[in-house]
Length: 495
Ligand SMILES: O=C(O)CCC(=O)C(=O)O
Ligand SMILES: [Fe+2]
Image 1 (cartoon, rainbow, N blue to C red):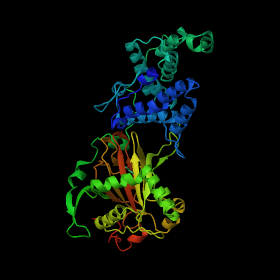
Image 2 (cartoon, protein in one colour):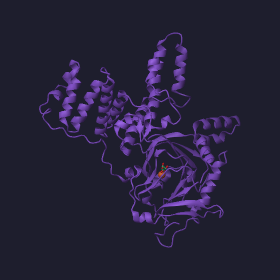
Image 3 (tube, helix red, strand yellow):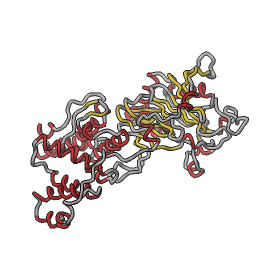
Image 4 (cartoon, rainbow, N blue to C red):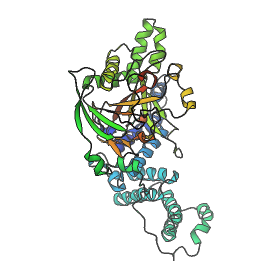
């Protein structure tokens, strides 16, 4: 039993899982190590049989929710790790040593590197990266002198296939020969053609690249922190104390782009308020709230609370082939009529600063409820627009929002600063907004003549280190009739 646990990383501290390698270790501990332990324990029949089964049941699921990380989660952690690696161009060796952008955690073992390489190989996304991971696993294995590693033959086989696909047939053949060395007859028969084909050992090796796809997209460049903005545009940007609806309370504004105007407002929320929003969104709070509410027979409020629970929002499960993950985060909705007044106060503050109505009603709301989003490691939101582009999308909204027009503006509050990564970026206008705790980004999604503004396309970059919590307030078009008027010219700018 001690042996089972010894490959786990027992010295977890707070924030340990806020590093992609640490997150991988943690999930592995639950999904693999504990599972093995349960299996071993359950063999100690009959003394503990019932207790162990009960324990294993209760840890694998808690009521209606699956809480115990499983194989799919480990796979998700590996996929996230690979995504981060490609986005931020991080070398395999450093990752394997547990070094993520200078922040260290426990290193990965040969089997881990092989597992990650295998996921990369099957995703068909980036073969050189898969090769790098698997070769790293072989290096670790050699340096540790573990000659009877169970995956050795599979590793050689995958490398042979990968090199062949990459056109490096010489190295492919070398790996294929290694794979066949200790293989049984069956294997040799199956791979006979592959192993003996002429020309394998005569072709010149094709050098392997670093293992990164040539991602020259603006989204990726902005996420990596490259300075891409035109200096002439930058020269016109400025900071100011902006007047608000309350004259004695101006707000610090940094203008990040002029047309369309994108600004960041600093210190628009306090640490305490940010904590409250995050706490309200967490499932445990939701549960306690529900119980309290049930005990007071406020059944009608339960509907609200149900949608206040952080739930995982992801397009597709993290399966090997799933590539359609547009957004990976957890989200909850907080309504202005929440028992905690903070929610309502914050809506008022947005109104004070933007001059737009944020009144939330059951019918014809001027703004939506607060959406609280939590991105863990690798969490991201791919480039998108916030306005509802077509009528079909509007039709799918709850009734109270259907007649209120499009999302005229976005108010995006940063409840935490991610330690690395996680910026909000606008690829068309080349703007990067850093996640500054207690600040908020603000922009209009519609032009002043009511047309949708495609230049407001934006994205949430993958979180590399730490956690990113944000809260969105989307303001709707209809209620702003007298608050954001048409300009004198069709292209009139916002102030
Ligand atoms: O996470 C971010 O920075 C962007 C989030 C976003 O665009 C959204 O929730 O619509
Ligand atoms: Fe958005």
